[in-house]
Image (cartoon, rainbow, N blue to C red; front, side):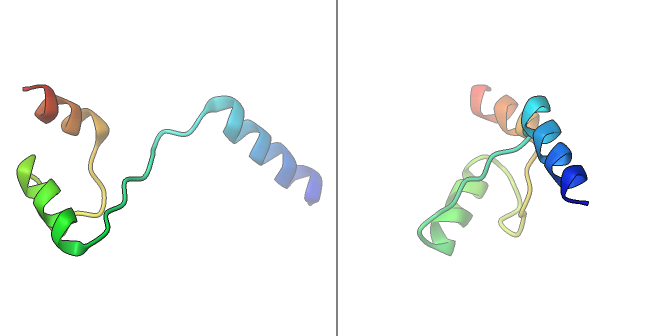
Length: 57
C-alpha cells in the first residue's frame, strides 16, 4: 500500500499540477477581483484559460 501511494505522489510531481491557488485577505477583496474580470463572485473555481483571455483582452 505505501509503495503504491509513493508511486502516485511521484507520478503527480512528474506530470505536474494543473492548478494553483489564489487567496485573498477578505471576502470583499475576492468579490472585487472576480467581478473585475466578469466572474460570478460565488465562483470557487475559474478555468485558467478563461482568466487568461479576460486579463489579456
